[in-house]
Image 1 (cartoon, helix red, strand yellow):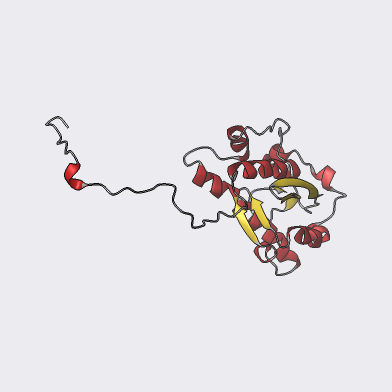
Image 2 (tube, one colour):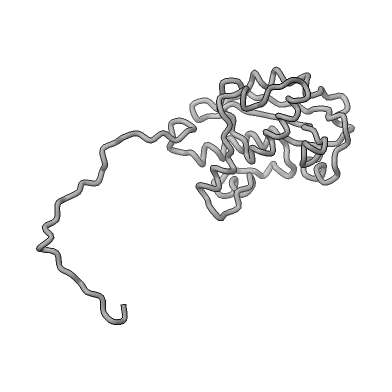
Length: 198
């Protein structure tokens, strides 16, 4: 998403929302993308991040106009969101204005790719740009944030982070260990005692 500001509790709204589909670990051409009229001003700091103006949004639909199509797009799917609490907070605020649904009730599950990245790369920068650099993904078109481009880049990053998995969720199966343990004759082991310096 792109928004008018940082906090939905201060009346900020979504102005752009996008999602892509991944099937069999490949991005398909199936996309959801919409610019939205937020019915309020955009904070200058937020506009510097995404470059979207109110003039551009004046004739765009409201969230209520696209909500059913969006929920249908994500229905029965695992939804991957980078820094999920931010987007989930905004989407749930928008959904709350038109009914009582929450995004968590409308999809299979939500996975926070930022949380996953922190587990895989602890102590490192894990912004979308940093992850693109780490995994060799071309993000040269990303001079400004945009919901659709960000969704496409996140799809590539997520696939790179989870490379080798058949499904998005990690499944552990019982497999015979490749390591074979050989019994050791204790009486044949040589004992090396530490020196004073050790």
